[in-house]
Image (cartoon, rainbow, N blue to C red; front, side):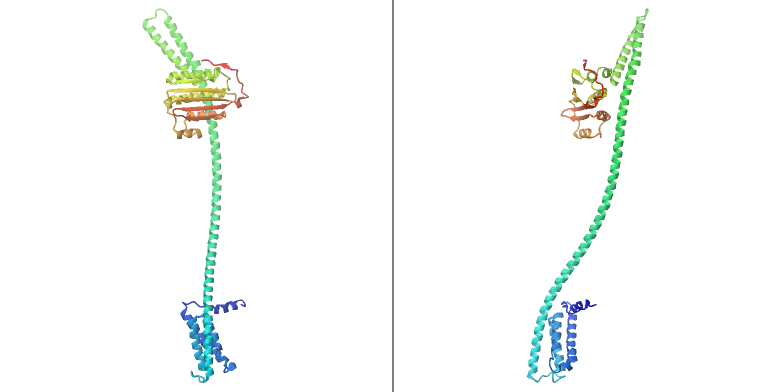
Length: 419
């Protein structure tokens, strides 16, 4: 309560703005009436002196609070009231003494000075109040903006936390899915290698069965046909039929041998990759009509059998693709055997491979056929590298197999390469 009185007093002396016209003039009128009433209450004490002391207070108050015109109006009304009720002759507006004129002039001068000073102070106070109000509004707006900014920051922090949590959960799911996919791909890769191994074993078995059973059976048929032809009293018609049968048996026997060697050439196990490659290239050139230039060393240290098998299958698949897809008229085979790695290159002068598809072949197995995917898996299993390059014109398949892992394998001595 004690702290509220000064603030209340300051509020009383706060200048009223110009738009509050009725309030300003009402206060001026009330101030004039109060000045007269207070002078009336002080009349027993003051008597016939200090007639205008309350008027000065009223004019000063009105000049500060209400403005110039209300202060003048309050001064005129207060002066008339005081002159009428307290200056002799009382209850009359007549003045008969020179001293009264002097006091009246002095009162008007004092009221004018108080009005001017009050108006000047009022204007300063109004400007100060306007500045304070502007600063207050600015501070209020700034505080509101800070509150909104703080609220937006808190909401943003909450959304960031929620988004971060969602991203973390998504990342965990993705990592789990990636791990599952990698395991699945690894299992599929092992399964593919296992299938290709079983395929090689099945080819070897079928080739052996064809050579040992069908080949022997056809040879026996030829022998029987020859015996029948040599028999006495054979009619010419029968001899002619036996000759045709013998010719068909020769053709069938040749087809069985070719199919058996294509499935799994015996030279690959007996003489190594060099001889098997030469034999396959010669047969391929004869069957396809494509000229093949073969660059294979005369003597070569045989690598491990799994390396030889992979190189032969790559050669076989590459030349098959040259015949089916490239439209080439010639091809080249190059085999290099270094102390630390084996390198096989198969090239052609065909139409090549589009750049986009070539990038897909070299970066992943997407878009690659079964043959290329199989070659890549075979080479990868041995720690090697397969690269496909498309030239203008032609395509080159390059395979490099390291020999570091074959240290424990038993290497046969160098063998001469048969032509």
